[in-house]
Image 1 (cartoon, one colour):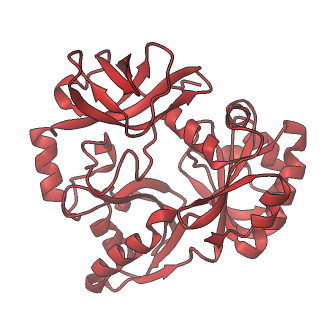
Image 2 (image 1 turned 90 degrees about the vertical axis):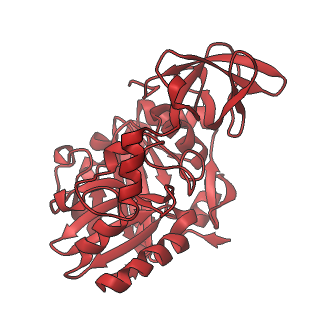
Length: 361
């Protein structure tokens, strides 16, 4: 297991550390519900330094990114971020990622920790054609997600930039917490606003300490990965390995909006065909109509008790105080309002397919 740069800091704070994607990571501090509500109501900080960062630069940087990703990176201006994915050649997804345009011919791809090696090998295999400069910065950089409705006010004293003027999915590079050239990105995985801060490993402890000093009057707290999962589930954001993987297509997963057929990319022809013919299954969101907690792997069954799908993500929503989840079902029953059932151990619990997000803010 690898340790992130702030490992000892989290231990001193009493975090429960667990192995995740090859790293020892803080899963919770005071408890999932309390941490979840901190992010929904004020501001919390996640250390997600296990994430991977690839720098792609040179004349053919954009051409390589256009080939391996599903979204249209040619639309990016300098200072833009874009959600995208890496399709494989079998209608599945290698990974989902965020692409940042740093300079004219320079991009940063932020990938999931569990897929760093897989993604690197995949992108590198296509780079033989383009010969872009590809560098893996994952071991050198840390990433803090400062999330919640009070994030802007709590963090403004730490930067000369006007943080309120960074729109969603835009970023600026500037001073933050006494460190120069920090990426301050108005992205996140919670649905409650805030920023993601990219810095070098040797800079992250100073930033962490100053973030907590500046945020003290706003009730800032450290937040673990368990609350990150409940927060993203309430928004219906996909988690790689649960809701999307090598066997699920972006069309099936409701990610058609990041799959742009105005360009040629890996497996684009087959995915366009699937979209035109409509997939046989779709990822849907559901709420339980009775008490219960749906978990990944539970069966989704019809009124006769026949298995028609499976739960990919599920939890007891701390914001809504009800069981919510995501799962794949046949396309013909994927409409909002449709009744389904979730097999929870020996009980069958009725549920209703709903529109995302679960949490409306």
